[in-house]
Image (tube, rainbow, N blue to C red):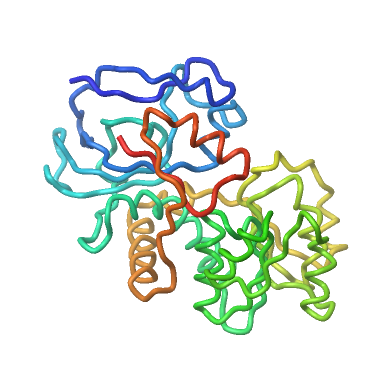
Length: 325
């Protein structure tokens, strides 16, 4: 069986993705063949495409998130059946019409969650889950800082933290993005292109700083983020859309108020299938309660994935972007 996909033979810009027809083998032991209906676009896809993150081999298919229908199952698979609607997050190889996936890594999709919503929510939503619920342990009365507050993870983190009773401060790049972040629970959007976010955070908190910060931007915001923290604050540096963070002296964390710093990745939180299932259940519950919602800012044909990457890297996106096979 053949299927079309975006393949990268040499890392580089968006043009490195080549729209190709390739053979797709039958599923092996423990695998399923998934016909994808919607695919998520994430900054980690850019990291792999540029070589910042190294793929296991060349050529490779980028993409970490998708949703679709099980078309065939391999030997020994008993947890999922042909015709089941499923999704996944954090598994390289997503930009394809058909792909093989380990059955134990699949996430069952509830009837009230569409394929597009799943592709927009799974990787970003599970990331927001571990940020807000596990690392930040956000509760009523907390003050939280969210960088790129109008992005895919940012909107989810803002709305989820606000639903839990926190006051959310967010950084955005434009007035339009500020309005969107505000609609999703960000009480104080800061347009960083015209206002110093550190100064504004200190003003908003009466000089105290925030207890928790979620920074997916990296190089451009990291040191400023440390200056926004209150004593014993928690910083989660979970991405680097502006570039890698330069090395720091560990003693800087003490100087800034005995801060806790973590550089998490989704794989470590979802490595145990039962943990992944529990996180997904929490995500679906938050969706049903209205604490979060799937916000799709752009839809592109899978064949036009380079267009989606250019928009993402140009900070021209809001919410989630998805690819449709």
